[in-house]
Image (cartoon, each protein chain N blue to C red):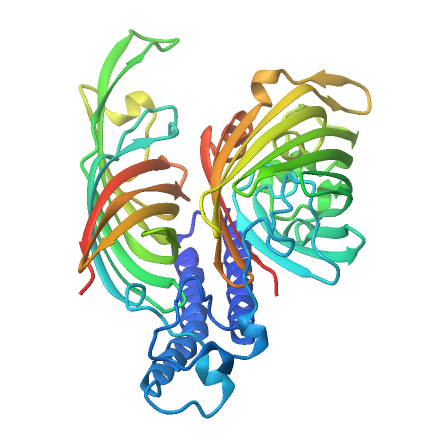
Length: 302
Length: 227
């Protein structure tokens, strides 16, 4: 837990430094700070600062989490957060995302890499129309139990003889029927297998669902209540979940794998986005000791 | 998180880094304000200035209700319940807010039953209360005529507990009293500024790092002043 706190705080420090750098590069958000009448005419403002900020559905600001969208070409994003429950952001998040162009982006969670869980995912936003979008996300995970130095001694001993591989594949449809509403629907399949021996099925890998083969759908809605803020609600509804060990397979019942989450995402300033969510899930109970649990995230798009 | 001192040291590092990062920005904002009357020498001087409704100190009083979201050592404790607090902070022009808070939760008594494998069944009441204090980072986002405030607080919780009718050893609750631990608390508040006053609704989720203090969700009413 102490290492987790260290990681979170270091992530936040890094995020803060990037935030300041970003804020120096761009002027303050005009939506927050309307220009007083006494100031010179906008013509004196450089062209870059006069550019409209757009809203949260603009290509440069749209959320790529659980949506079909990807970052624009040559766009970087750095996300820092903690207490997530999805396998991409469980425990801690320090993610780097880069838009390659043609609707393709690459993403890696460095916080997980730092504790021995190697991961890389890519998203291709391959159907892009004004009202309907499709994206496909493919990832690869590898965890070597001995490298997970952050685990408590008892847990470390338990997982030291386990390796886990996981290949998540997700097809997401996003629809924006109006400027203030977005529907998302994901169909997700993860192939996962754990190698090695363990005396019990419960472990860090299974509790966090990193080692769980799963098929689920995830409907969700985003309600844009202003040009800077959206309410986001998602449900994870697994059709099956199982843990594949070398010599046996265990099914995990629906009541232990379904999840609900609701939260707010706002543009705090130009290129800076904040997100606070509440999760209700069994996995939260396993990971953090309570079914209802928060997570938070700060994203910077320089 | 068995060593709160180490955690507090980390929090101190973070706050130092934050102050180091934002102090120059605040200074630039003030300097820029001072030159408002003069003709702009450079294009950068014409960067929009903060509105008076965002920048400045604010003092908020809160009253609310909190619930524990987990048991500790198989005992249900409710150290939140009716909660009252104050929060003083300063908001910079870009919306960033830095503040400090203190709250007192009266807690409540929870009736519980035990049926041990050896010995007789028994009932007992677990009573607990808590005080919380610390520093908070926040960001204000305009939402029509309201303000949406994201916060992330870092602080200390001191929980007092007492079992009626049974000794703590009977329920294997062997923790210090008061039980002190660090917490961090993501939260959201929706505020309505009106002249020099503001009021609203919000919540904090106190994530307790110490396993013997239950985490809790506190919903609250807020009212305050912006001098």
